[in-house]
Image 1 (tube, helix red, strand yellow):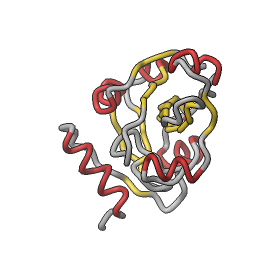
Image 2 (cartoon, one colour):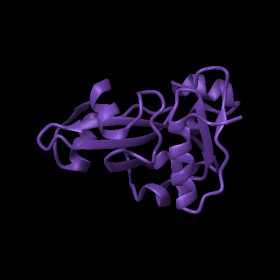
Image 3 (cartoon, helix red, strand yellow):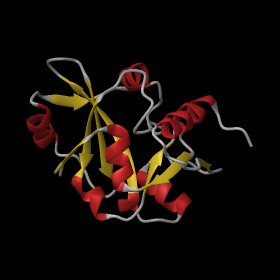
Length: 157
């Protein structure tokens, strides 16, 4: 079965980083952390959800890769990135990442964002991230996530 173009971009980026992972597509949605966990058969905490914020002064994209069990504290995030942040709308997310909300992967973005990784993900053996579409995911380790994103690990809750 052939992957959609968005998932192929993610696959190529992962291979360029030296990861031999398999993108899995599900007939059910993996758009939310709860849907992804139910489809995969893992815990919600193991879902590495990609949330895009917008720097209010610079307009830059800030990608937070958070445990599906956690909610981002926007004040803490603002302190980490040193500017106020707000949730990005669908158009901003699509323009800056190249993907629709619900399928944003941690890599292969149209414009490289600032990346912040939830420190709680590092406590897990394996995690699952979106692979470019609302029903495609891939498995990786927290160390691999940090490596492929060059993200900053921080407390975001």
